[in-house]
Length: 320
Image (cartoon, rainbow, N blue to C red; front, side):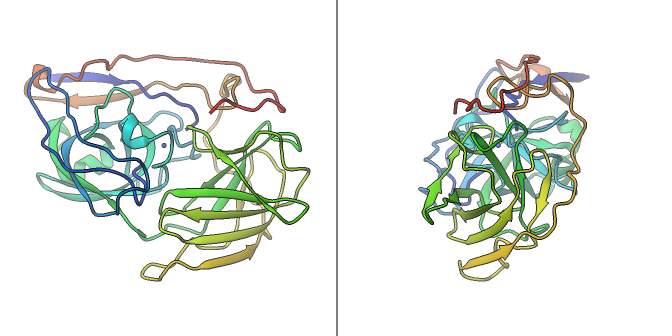
């Protein structure tokens, strides 16, 4: 029998475990009607490598995840975390190593799973199939944050639609570890801290001028890079050519000048693709699971929702 699990995703634009995320291992109940539970620390208070005994399901991503990345990783290996582990986007861009009944997989955190309790992760089908047959539906796993995973590409930056000299939102991708801070250099030479929204953009609510900008990224492992020449070019992915770190190296500062601004390779959007707060509209994601006993796999609160909202005002600062 195949049971269909519609999983709610709050698409605030798109979510991982901070390199230094999280988590103390505890036992997870896996009984009919039961909820997984784990003790979770605030982002940055634990070191990578702390393991969590929990459960995993799988789902199919439609649109962007909560972390706002324009597309899933090329290898299709990604994961959505419970709200406590997602931690208002503090986990976005990090990776977790997941060990299941038939193997292990490394997956990037790109999304949130609102109905998941702490200790319950929701894997892409490609990732789940590395640890168990898709027909298993729900399996016991042990997972943990990964420090300094191999990077797929240099850092890229994206200035959000609606940004102007009066309101600025910036998204960084290919950071490997979650980001701890994003700063913009002011005309006076001071560094201004941006505020992370729970859809993973970093916001200057009163803007940062007309640009081009100098942006400094610092991750949870202490790696730091500075990118010069970031254009106020909303909706375009700007390649930097700079790597957040090299595997096996100690944290160190790096700097690069942005010289190319290639077009974004993003999925199509709709007229209602953005919320009034500047976050992408909520998108429905559906997870399909085949389980031996539907009662044993049922997770309370997994109901589909859809939400379309109006595009943002260019000068409106989103609530975060």
